[in-house]
Length: 273
Ligand SMILES: Cc1ncc(COP(=O)(O)O)c(C=O)c1O
Figure 1 (cartoon, rainbow, N blue to C red):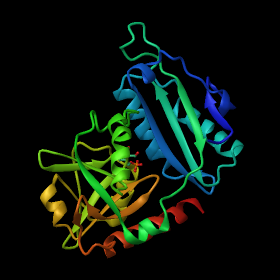
Figure 2 (cartoon, rainbow, N blue to C red):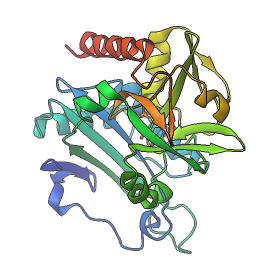
Figure 3 (cartoon, protein in one colour):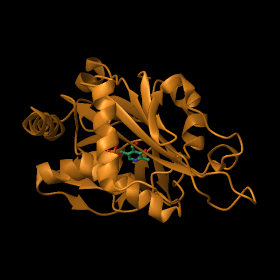
């Protein structure tokens, strides 16, 4: 964590940030957040993340007492004070302290600056393994702070040499615990349409690719895919070459995935340098 954060309406020493123990964030797991990267001291796709964060606040009935312009200014100050050339900014809005300890209240806004470590080069070169897990994230389109199942399950997936999980229900897949999911079949890029967080990386990869089919994807189609990958702010695009005990495609990162990652990196440079 970097030395300065935003809390209690001002920029303070991160070590002194605090929250009431009866906040719904703690006692009910109710709150929202968002996370974006800084590249060359600039928020990459910042407006997309601010859109999603304000939408999450509205959908969870949590008042966000700051305008878009105020948020931009606070973020700018945090990047400067923390000299955050390359890193991440985490905006958190807690559920607040509620009279009945249940109904959404007036939450507390925090913005933290963090350093960011990408997965190893080896993972991008060889691809990673996912484990299937029968689950659908509740209110999946909202970026809530509820990751309890994934946090709990992570000991299991690590023990089995997996990078993460692939959620599925009734034979259809949705997303990974902190990433969206794509497959490639006969040159066509396909990504699920339902029960997912609308990822900002997903959105921008779709734009870059131009042609992407957005529809439900069955597990059977995943087994038969030529390529697969997960994508997120902290990974960009990470090829998936194994799911449970099955090899995806020829077991190596596919050309369409690799090309898309290159194009994303080019766009990042164009936007931030
Ligand atoms: C459940 C879930 N799906 C997808 C994503 C990817 O979204 P983004 O590309 O905006 O990071 C995340 C990111 O944390 C996530 O938590």
